[in-house]
Image 1 (cartoon, rainbow, N blue to C red):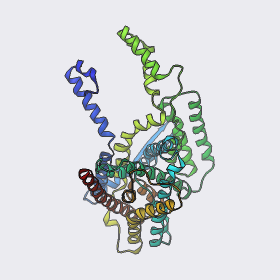
Image 2 (image 1 turned 180 degrees about the horizontal axis):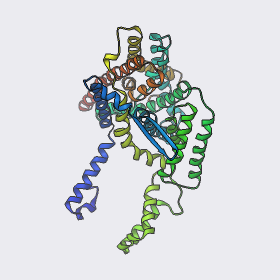
Image 3 (image 1 turned 180 degrees about the vertical axis):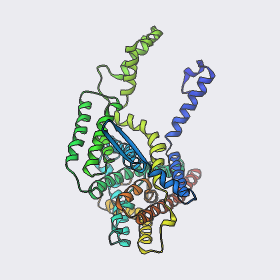
Image 4 (image 1 turned 45 degrees about the vertical axis):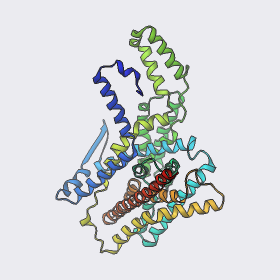
Length: 449
């Protein structure tokens, strides 16, 4: 059945273009594809950083990039603008995901959210303890939070590769756990990896947030109107000494989850304009009609959903691969694994992700269920919970991000990144293997029944 009956009346070239656009949109929203792109970017970075062209790799990211207007000029390395600037979009999407889940998702009901919260806490505490057991002294101790995070895109992408045989509740549970992990990671960055705070910066950030609230109160729905207030908030947090990407989380949490009320409901407006255009097709040239159609289309969806969906392809296929390309290039020749410090960091991070995550998720879930605090979702058993725990060990983006905040020493940072890459790869392979076995059992049970 054709989803677009009107296509029959269009020229064939238009129909082909329409179908190609639909398929491109579908392609850009498949988690498995974005996970593969992220993996390819990391592989390119590793190969580049360990090739004869390694100097060009490092020179590229340290190249100065200048932005400014008039006397307000800032010149920083390309690496800074990617990690502290571009990644703000990543954190903005994270903030909106958290906002939506709290409003009407897995975190909106305490009984429903209790088990994912417990599992996420176990998946943070146990990996941190394993890392500290191998790295009990400073400066290695500073990396205790590196293996605590879960990469949502990568983990869900690996799960998507397993197909549709597995219960959908596994994906929902993994998403909820990963989002809670992100909340904990954001709090860890704010509390433990921010420098001495300069309080005057909060005044600048407060001006930006006040402008956001003012625009929301007067009913401004265009996302572009919030770029300048967002930039002011980002600058304020940078001046405080806190990590400026936290501005993305704050703005994401402030994004409304309800569509803006209009004088005329959007659906009724579309019906009215449609009826008028049917009677007088040339009315579309009327500027008032065009503006009304634009507003109705925009306000049919809540801002938190609309902006997140708009940013998703850019973050998944732009921001995150660029971040991986800029930060996953670990030069193996610069890491002396024979030295005690670096080898212990690699081992601590890798084991914490591969072993600590599933153990923490399962142990905390057992305790929560024994205490009656939550219940397993319908269609999900302990085998599915183990799969979630294994996939939660895919840290990657957020883990590398925390590693760069934790270590100033280049050798320790390289060791932490290597541990993240090896641990995440092992966790992904173990998750794929266990998930493929579960999917085979589900298909076998279905055929037998």
